[in-house]
Length: 202
Image (tube, rainbow, N blue to C red):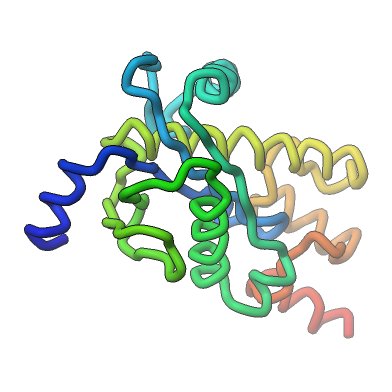
């Protein structure tokens, strides 16, 4: 970030925080969120979603939805992840979240070290921003609560995989289930464990 970016960020009136959840799992969409908080309605307890209990995340997610000036939850599909690669799919989903905001931001603060293309405003990337910037923390929470719920719903359709427990990550339990029951549509075929399993069964 150069000095002009820094000055713009400090003078911007409407700042959106942006984060993603689900880059590492072997299954499911990557989910992103963009949040513009209301300075007049502070939310206590915002933090990196991974550092919060499930109960706290869910309570905070409801408070964010009630108090934020606006928010948008977006995604990139499993097919898009396989076609583009996980990084490009994540950046695409982040841009979708920002562009889906009903209030156009003057500036975006993005968790990580890359800025998506196609944003409607200048932006800065902030490494570990979800633990530093309230709006990014809020985006992290909304994205994680949304994705976790989707994996619970996926578990209901395919209970043999245990998605409600590992949320699609490559745990021993998940890998054993893939080996035993095979690959389903929600698995990311470009990820090595899934690709390897398909090669074994082809």
